[in-house]
Image 1 (cartoon, rainbow, N blue to C red):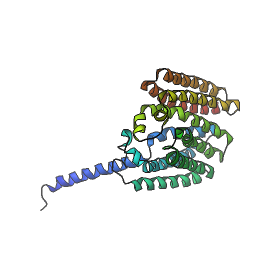
Image 2: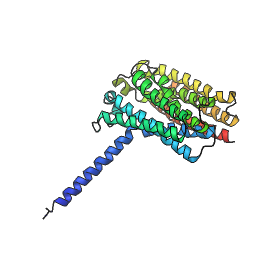
Image 3: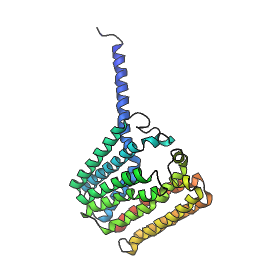
Image 4: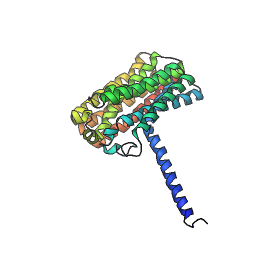
Length: 304
């Protein structure tokens, strides 16, 4: 006859197994950095509708393919940066530095997600979209993570090109190949990345210093970073109006770009003047709004 304690024991073991499985799933999801993906996928989708009238199935397939590519790059970033992640407070609880996951698991997850992304985009969209997504993966992993991040204050400027590939992927998925007009959203995201990320780096510069990562505020100081943010905010605004000059977008987009750009410059100068964490956070959050609304403006302008 089974012991009267066997049922509670089985229930306890089952609860532990369930908790462990949930943690494993949560860790696998964390490898893909889903919060980072949201903005990348938004630029992908808006670029698709600015480029044409894609079917819902093409949009869904491109979003999934882009998500797989981004998730694969992020997983390999987790694997490669596991040594410095242990040194930074904000990353110490990631799956690998916390000890919950073996490094090779993240590496294999990243590789398989990337392979799946390439074949999905090649089949559901076209080979150009697949190659562009692969280029974004290679730039983030090879150029930013492995080459620039630990070596130069220009890491985010040059490495920021990785985040500019998603709108090109979306554009190519709709048009069937490479289009010159897709370079406009590409250039905007590239320029925008510097002030957006430098504002964030002001908030977590102690972490970067602890890990010996040469982010701009760590190496050159706060005032230099504030001035660099103003310069790159101005570059972002200038780049944002180029599509109007070339005729790619019209007056609706121009109005949106100018209003958003004026506020971006105001936020940048306020940070330069005040130099506070509150201002850095305000600029960082506004930059998210800026890019979201600007890309929405592209779609509205293209459809009206």
